[in-house]
Length: 424
Image 1 (cartoon, one colour):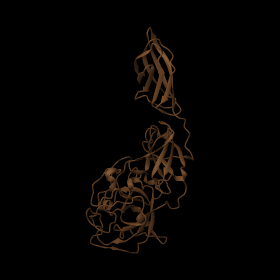
Image 2 (cartoon, rainbow, N blue to C red; image 1 turned 180 degrees about the vertical axis):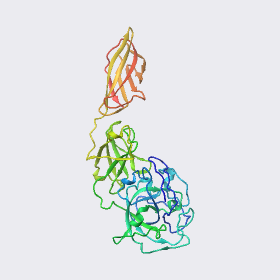
Image 3 (spheres, rainbow, N blue to C red; image 1 turned 90 degrees about the horizontal axis):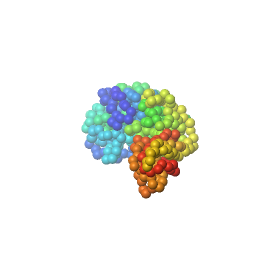
Image 4 (cartoon, one colour; image 1 turned 30 degrees about the vertical axis):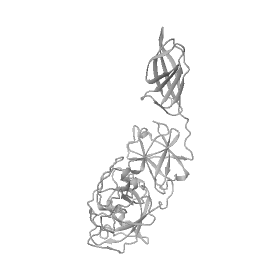
């Protein structure tokens, strides 16, 4: 069975072809109505047919990690859809009415979790995953000497193909081909199950926490990351990942998933346009890991103008609290640029202080006999003798220390007004 490349941030990933033995389960034949799945857990082990595929696509598997960055060489794909008898494709991630079609992939939210897989019965008939056909037709399921062998595997990819494996069997899993002969029973490897004793067997599986877990998470930038668009992949988790929060402009914000790649998130820097980042991570129970530990890291200089490698792991430091950031403020200074009898030109320079200012407003009071004739580089309005100038669409966002200038033509004698500047 071959794989095709899988690209980052593609809503409908390319699909693996089905030209070699696969695997899957359903003890009964289609048709059945789709039943809502508990996609977050398996309270007891579940049974599904199993297939195999050779490798994750390039550069990433469905979870947003390259294969060589996985915590284990033993990995699986879960079904994107739960649509028995319906082999159409639906936009990913699933939203709205399509949420009822959710498979165990869970829009990527089961990425990075571990499952314990146990070998089940062998099919003596035809078990090819053909659409609208029963599994193991013209045969039966039998136990043999391989039953009970187990292997712990990590969820790294998704199965959304238009075949019975990925649509009709809710608990189908797609396994790394190289893992099939790595199952063990009583401490002894089962080395000859594939290919002669495979035939897309039934496998029993359930979610588990990462076996023998130690250390802390790994963080890496994905290709194309820059201060203006940043994608990070978070891996090496004890109990999967359900969310990332980033700290920016003095507040925590929920990060958006990169498509349905469940370990890749779009984050923003501490200050807009800069290169320092701080995040917190939530596990599959939606709990902040390590009591809300804050992970602090920076975009490397090699990522200028953007990151080239598919994945670039970075070091980080940790803290209990995010960095204290001075709130963005602004100042405004006035200058008479030109004057003549009965009129003048005034210019005002707005300067951002603290952190980035996203929008600014300047106010002052006209002196007796003054009025405004015209203005530029801002939206000016008056109410009685009070003048208000708001930023234009193109000069409202100012990094700390950056400036914007607007001007106006006034009637009357020039004076030095007392200006006030407020962000927002």
